[in-house]
Structures are given as C-alpha cells and as structure tokens.
Image 1 (cartoon, helix red, strand yellow):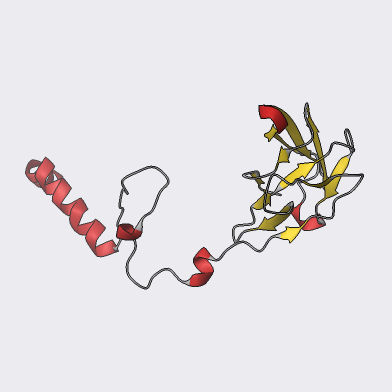
Image 2 (cartoon, rainbow, N blue to C red):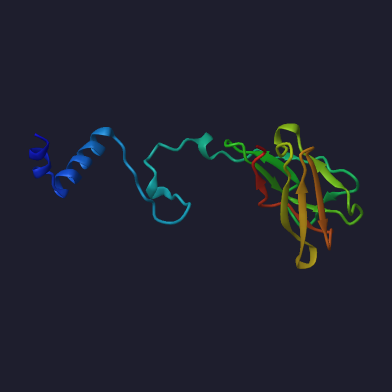
Length: 160
C-alpha cells in the first residue's frame, strides 16, 4: 500500500495538498512593501481605532540641580510610556549651570531593569554630541561638551 501511495506522490500533489491545508487552516501571510511601514492601503477600513494610534501622554520632568528647559525646543523635557511599555523622552535640557549632575529622575515603573542602564548619544549645543545615561534608580544624567542644549527627542527604551 505504501508503494502505491509513493508511486502517485508528485511535487504537484504535495504542493496542492499543502495549499488546501493552508487555506482551510485560515493562516495567511502578507508581505508589505517597504520596511517597518504601514500605510492606508495596508489597512482595512474601520480596523484601526483611536486607542491604537493615540498620542502619547507626556508628563513634564521635574528638573533638578540647575537643569532647565532649553529655549531652543518648544516641548518641555518629559517622558511618556506607550501601549507596548516603551518609554519615550522628549524636549531639550539646558545644563549650563548644572554640569555633571542629575537632570531629573524617572518614576519607578519607567526605570531600566536592575543591573541595566540606558546609554544614548544625544545632540548637544553647537553641533556637538553628548551622552545621556538613564540608571536603574531612574536618574537621568546628561554629559555634553556644550550642555546649553541637550536634546532628549527620539530617545526610547524598554524598562524591562
């Protein structure tokens, strides 16, 4: 009996059986054009709801040790967490009178996991680069050649 089945087994038979199984199982896969992008043509009407694309609710950071909001950026330094638990920072700091001190502290739920820290290169004044560290105790420490402007925009991390 096995010989009879094997004698009728062809590439076309195998592929058609797999195709029927995939259709009946309901599994579909779709490759979207582009990389990590979705546009209106990729979404069925009415399938995306307001909570799916809601704006982040930023809270202003309580600045410490002489750090102030930079006049060069419209947004106050702050933080938010999205629906997936990713922490987002925004705004810009002016640390002219606060070099080598903690700029602000994040709430406990938004801090890096114990034993970890976030280290990011940031844009600083006069087209220089600085380093921003977020430590497990929530302290945000910026170090820049020109601390008159330390941008937080675009810094994201997972607190887990």
